[in-house]
Image 1: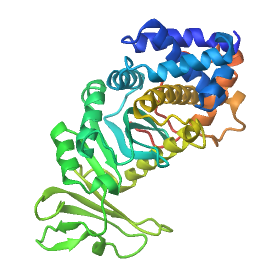
Image 2: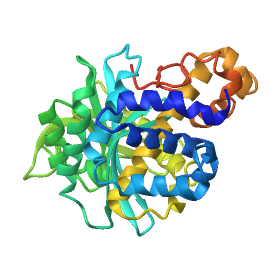
Image 3: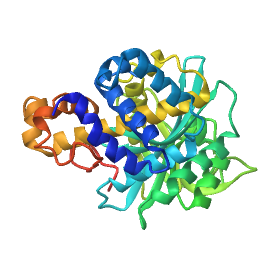
Image 4: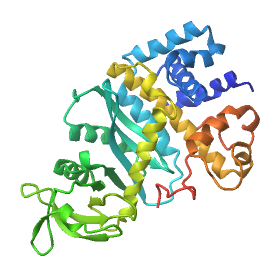
Length: 369
């Protein structure tokens, strides 16, 4: 089975997962995502060169351009389909699902708000919204609530959802209130100047409680200021060698402070989307609606890559072909790219090449506890 022919079985799976798309639309999405992984770029001309089996490069590039410009391919439906496929492909054996919320930017051209699934050292975008700098489609908390609403129907029943956010969003009382209204827990980072009311009635700035590296402290407080007091749990985690402490607020007192480290996985995923992977920064796709569809193709490519990387880690017979030694030194992202590059040889040893499969394991602290 030659590499170009691999597109067709992948396209069948994509068509099934994105049932709202027409057959030509789902095929282009499948080819688009396949081309991104093989080219390790999201620039259309480069992808078209890797998809030359589908026609002349210029012709294929125009098909990709038409896909990005097609207003019939809606953002909400695309995110819902992708979130459903990813979450239904997660071998869920625990009780807690971690979602990461953050905003990333493309220089001065675009910003993207994304809700991602924390997974084995990386984060898989489940819902997103691209917009021009300082031109939010709605208020930021309403935007996050909207994205969570697209994901929520696919969350496994009976599991606890823990949402993490950094200081830019985490200091918002509206965010905490919205998440609790949805029945989600939160673990957010706060600023040093945030006002807390301690159990003894004293009001202090959060930063004044942090004394020195190595310090760990937690306790019940009221947070978010005199006009928005909310009961929650405050934590200080100042790791040795760190310049500053994590000042954290959570609605779930059993959450360990070190769990906030999962939020960094989203930064690594954004890096994979940019200079370390898909080179989104070179795409020159700056119109927000077009960028939303490019993100659909990039995210599908990313989820597929992490799925293949997962299987490389789980199956020793595959791991030996894409990594040296018994210690895993490469990310799932790198391993997944290597697996697809050798899919002709390895496809009979992989559980599923043309579907998604996510298995929490020992490679890193898992999303599932």
